[in-house]
Length: 231
Image 1 (cartoon, helix red, strand yellow):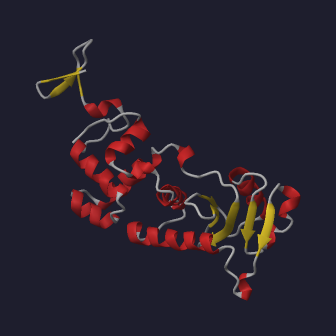
Image 2: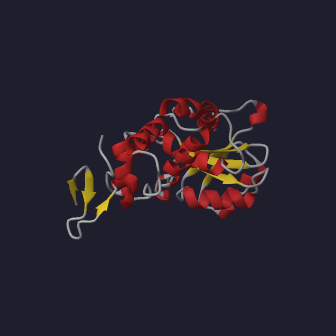
Image 3: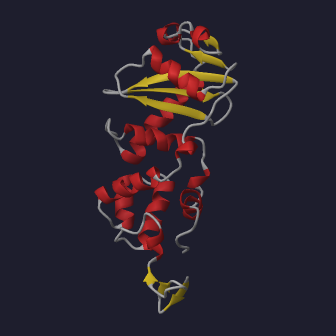
């Protein structure tokens, strides 16, 4: 392609086109500069209301673009495969629950939203089978859903009782829940059950310090395989 008269033209057919037309940005009416600034705000955890003021777009538009940026991230980058010593626990909201695990001493986590008010044993089996390597040691709070874990997975199980104020084994995953609540409150203020899975996915990326948050250019390289623009 070549740039002529402030427009991009195809070398073969000489037809003009926008740089946005080669990606999922093609239907956007916003300028490239505005999109770039929205992406920068999302990467840097600028709260949605503050982003609206900085970029001069409506609050619904900010939510829309933040959703778009998140949805274009390759799914395989969201949850990590865990091994070794693992802390596992659940978090509960009004309408849903989340089961999560963290590889101790690392930034690797895996979280899954359960569309029920409680986590059942089958949910735990499916989650641990998918995200924890065999022969790892899983530390829990001794909930009944984990009892007999060694019978249905090749995992070693160690537990403590929170009612006895024992929190040493699961301290790291408890810290993950605290970080998640702070992230939602500061950046989005609240979350509905319909958006919970999306924000959990975004949190996993941020917690693991995924490189897509390094810069807008890095995001485009990873999520589009190219840079649609450079400012």
